[in-house]
Image (cartoon, rainbow over all chains, first blue to last red; front, side):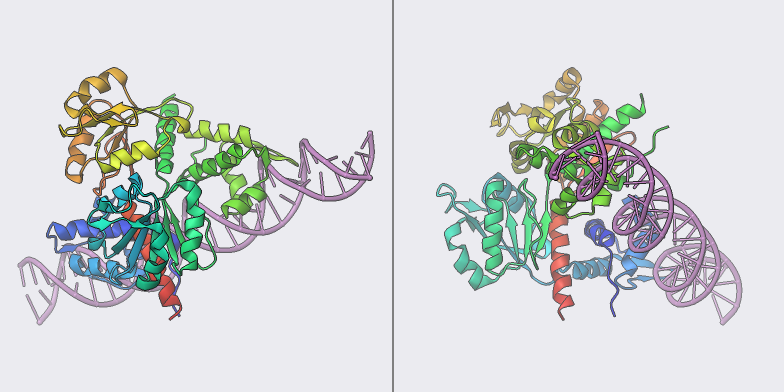
Amino acid sequence: MEKKVSGSVVNRLPRYYRHITDLYENGVERISSKELSRRMNVTASQIRQDLNCFGGFGQQGYGYNVEMLRSEIAKILGLDRGYTAVMVGAGHMGRTFATNTKFESRGFKLIGIFDSSPSVIGTDIQGHIVMDYAEIGDFVREHKPEMAILTVPKDATKSVAEDLRALGIKAFMNFSYTELREMEGVIVENVHLSDSLMRLSYKISEKEDGGR
Amino acid sequence: MEKKVSGSVVNRLPRYYRHITDLYENGVERISSKELSRRMNVTASQIRQDLNCFGGFGQQGYGYNVEMLRSEIAKILGLDRGYTAVMVGAGHMGRTFATNTKFESRGFKLIGIFDSSPSVIGTDIQGHIVMDYAEIGDFVREHKPEMAILTVPKDATKSVAEDLRALGIKAFMNFSYTELREMEGVIVENVHLSDSLMRLSYKISEKEDGGR
DNA sequence: AAATATATTTACATTTATTAACAAATACGC
DNA sequence: GCGTATTTGTTAATAAATGTAAATATATTT
């Protein structure tokens, strides 16, 4: 029977992937947990234990092979499965996300962008022609994307999510200020940029008070 | 002596603030930890314990007064201190963040946007005229913002951060794919949108395997 | 080829975080 | 106004994550 991996570990995986990818792109061949721990500012022990949840990728006396470790983490994250995504909302946020995120290199494919505003339908975003939201049903039924990225205004979020869920989409990434509630059998990742801003604010004020 | 509040609790604060604000804006006057726990999908016990790190804001037999609790959390987060921020990088990400984030209503003030590209200097973003990065020194010395939001390409991140640090800025929010390392006496919040995407991917593939 | 240094694994102890339980305090109906 | 139902703050119990140390396997050096 497989042991269930804890949420904390899963949350750290993308960070490992980023750092390992960075090493890989810089031509580093091998890395020890100790050296990686120094770079990532975590304990070596945690790195070893985290990675060991998924298998023994390292070799004693040698460390971890960067290329191999990178591809293993990619596999764990599901980046080798060719998942596809549609995006709904071609406003500022949608445009930015589509432009900044290197979908292909992360193992995802963005296959369609939709919006309901006539002024953006037909415009180009990174080579994608924005399609009419009215046509999303046919598109999803034909291409069966696994995930949807919601960059719509908050009032529209819930209804769009319900539409897409009815069409069979099982995973959502939500950027609107509203928190999209976990629906039955559906995976939701809410992204709140302002949360980071507030955490930063907390830390500043904590520091000010510390020197009081 | 004051007890140090754990990072887990601090990380949850913005979420409490969002939910309480939502209640407040919907005219709800009071809320019990039980009802809030139902809405937020956490245990009531955790809510009470988290809030109690900062003081007893509730009343037995009554619950929490929404307006009061909201203002208390705002205070804890430092949202009442009038912190100001400059943004460097007026590309897609900068534009989106400046447009989407309701700075004023969150208690922050964005006081200046900078870029070094002649094609964007002088353009308008939400009423802010983008200024030349070459002039940021004078601006920071004059206005003394507490934080900087970095929405520059990853190659520029480190050098911009060092410039601003030398000018006395103590807190950074970094949006570039590079992870900005914690510098001496400086607070850093890295935001990585692709991490969320990878977590989503992990959960999808985990689910697929579960049904295997 | 043996000895030594390196680095992962595994097991265990410690610390931290979460949930549960309960006594004290308040509100609200009758 | 009195008694009952709520609901918090707090303490105790449970669960989880982290760090430490010992054991094992691999590389490297002599």
